[in-house]
Structure formats: C-alpha cells, structure tokens
Length: 168
Image (cartoon, rainbow, N blue to C red):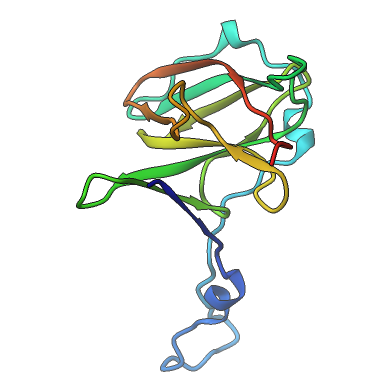
C-alpha cells in the first residue's frame, strides 16, 4: 500500500532556537532558518513553451508536462504542481514525503503547462492541486501511484497528465 506523509516545517520553532551559551551583543547575529522562496502565481504568469525547455544545469534535472481535466480536457490554469520525494521501505513498498516548505513546487500556466527546472535528481510522485484543499496524486495506467525518476542531467517530459483534482 502506498502512503503519503505531508510534512510541514515549523519555522517559528527553528527561528526561535538559539545557542543560549553565547550572550547576545549589539554586533552578534543569531542563526536563522533559511527557507526557499515559495513561487507565487505571478511568477508563472507567462505561457511556457515546452519545446524551448533548456537543458538542466550539470548534476540537476528538469521535469515538465501538461495537466488537464480528463472529463472535459480543459487545462488546469494556475494550479499548483508539486513533487514529493519517493522512497522504498524495507519490504518494497513505495512511500513518499511532501515537505510543503522544501519540495519542488510550481504553477501550471494558462495552458496547463508546467516545468521544474534544475531540481535535484530523485524519484518523485507528482501532486496536482492545493495540498490543503483539492489535490490528487498522479496515478499510472494501472491506477497505482506513478513514481517518476528524474535522473542527473535529464529533461524528463511527462507529457499530458489527466487528473481530476475535484473528484472524491
């Protein structure tokens, strides 16, 4: 059985932690948590030309595709697309972790096209939609969670992805 673990990052707890053995002075700075910026819809306002995807930087991967509704074939415009890291456990089951603070995230453009540029090579599961409300985990043809393998220096075209994020 495949499972999903949604992991949130408690920023306040990380920022609030400090080494109390060093008394603060006027010129000292406390360590702070570094959180990558979360993309906003305005970051992805322009249409993506999937034929013009650049090669990834050395040691990285690029993943791209298109998301649409299987019922009416309408593209999902400005929908979140995230990648959850997939891991196999000791008995061969695949589990995956979606860290809402650090997992790769992007938004589909008005045509449903999305791209993850220069991400760490890894095995991932594609999550489409808002993980706090309506979302679906991408399934393969056998209706089992689809695990993709983004390899080093690879441009991985996922093609058209049909998923109904509003279905029960």
